[in-house]
Length: 135
Image 1: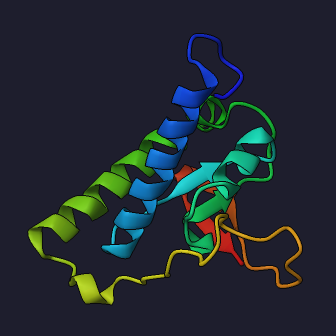
Image 2: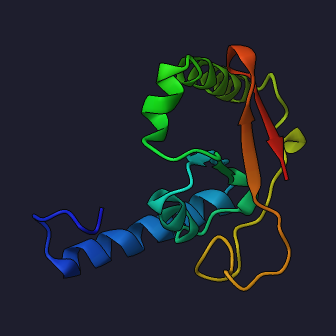
């Protein structure tokens, strides 16, 4: 976090710009991200990355999201499904061209706060850790 002591502001700024550059390059090369955030300051951090809107999952909860997902038995099934999908892609079992590819945003942020179009992903959890989404 930018509020943690121990790094000088110039170093943090360089690291932040390097992160943004690497995220943009990864998205441009076809890497897909899933960035799960609650309704708190991490949502503002997510917005500052040049990620496609469809890669940011907003959960209508407040608190430490990983701990909350772990506590209700959702975190591990989510990780297992995500890793299994990545392994299927790496083995070629899922054709790369069949995966949705959203472009990186043109500007500096995942979305503009003045947008009138609502197209962020709302993550909804069901029994057994089943994730459904609403756009």
